[in-house]
Length: 219
Image (cartoon, rainbow, N blue to C red):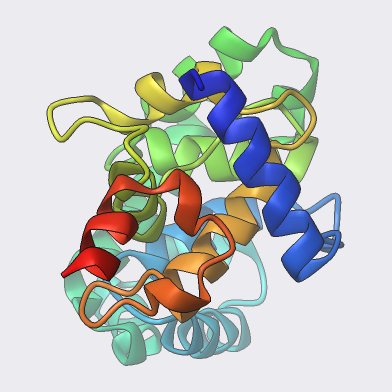
């Protein structure tokens, strides 16, 4: 079975196991961008708390952009690395405002995908994962964000080499139109079953497709 066929079979089995994904769409792209910056190296719970406090403290993007960095850092303290995150968020907002004369990213929907991705990647501290999250969840663009859970699962499945750039390597194998659902399902599999330590291989719905799991079960 080739990698494209294997990924399609993984997608089918995970949908059968977890059911169809129904995330709230569309999402505001700038909101997503700031939330994703806050989510780096912290839990979803800490991200959500920090974002809620950020919007309570600064009800408009303009107020957030113009605030003292110390005040922004205090608002996002719960996410950790608060000074670094505050500086990055404000740098992103200033760059967008300088280039667009507003703080609105909805224009990305009308751009060809490579141009939309290029714009986001040009922003301070924005990498492929963050750009892919924004374009997938805000505009349903056919991108596949790869986090640490997805990297771990796909490496164990033999779909990703440790030397590969994961977004470029996995994108060709993802079934078109299933990017968002497969992204969510693989994260869930990584959190609940294919854990970094003590993976629950015997409970895995794709065990027979996984060289790592078969080896672990054979020991």
